[in-house]
Image (tube, rainbow, N blue to C red; front, side):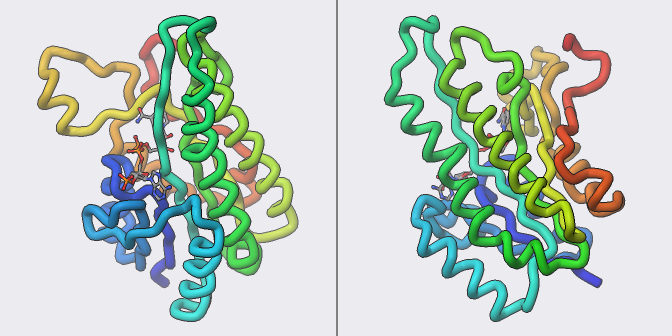
Length: 222
Ligand SMILES: NC(=O)c1ccc[n+]([C@@H]2O[C@H](COP(=O)([O-])OP(=O)(O)OC[C@H]3O[C@@H](n4cnc5c(N)ncnc54)[C@H](OP(=O)(O)O)[C@@H]3O)[C@@H](O)[C@H]2O)c1
């Protein structure tokens, strides 16, 4: 049976690869981003009533949700710890934490009811190994991970799972074309990320719930 999948932040390179993968597998995909680019539904995930409205609409139209893949990103850095601009924290809080809170709270009841549901975020190695140049980013990703783990705890007695996939950085074809000499050895290709996401349904929810799964290519510097 085809799955009903929501992809939030679907307009980025990772989002497009993930939407393509689910679509190729015959699933029903609802793709959302802020601007409505690349065939996505335009919706600001910082607008909590709008996110709740989306959950209600999907419940009415499809009767269920089998997966939510939350891919909203954003990055800010600083030359040094002392030069961190706390305006960057405000931006990252909204992009990486608040959108996640809105989406997970709105879709929790549907995932709780699913008989094989997954909730997925993509985190960064920086969350556990921050450098002085990415204090705000690493702290925001660490907070997003803690939120996802709390959601996993809430799903323990269900047939759904909340999972954290970890990358060092992502790469896609346009990046490779722009820098043909670069190896991108520590980067995870967005198409490999998409396969890793759909593969999560091949494992029992209890086997992946609350797991951090690192997708940094094997053999690259750890
Ligand atoms: N790229 C990397 O190297 C890297 C490294 C580690 C982790 N990750 C994580 O991997 C995931 C995918 O990364 P990415 O680089 O593909 O992400 P991205 O391009 O930074 O963001 C993806 C999408 O999020 C949408 N978005 C942002 N704010 C939104 C809002 N308020 N409401 C609705 N949509 C919103 C954007 O839509 P608009 O363009 O319309 O604003 C964009 O299409 C993210 O969670 C990111 O944190 C990425």
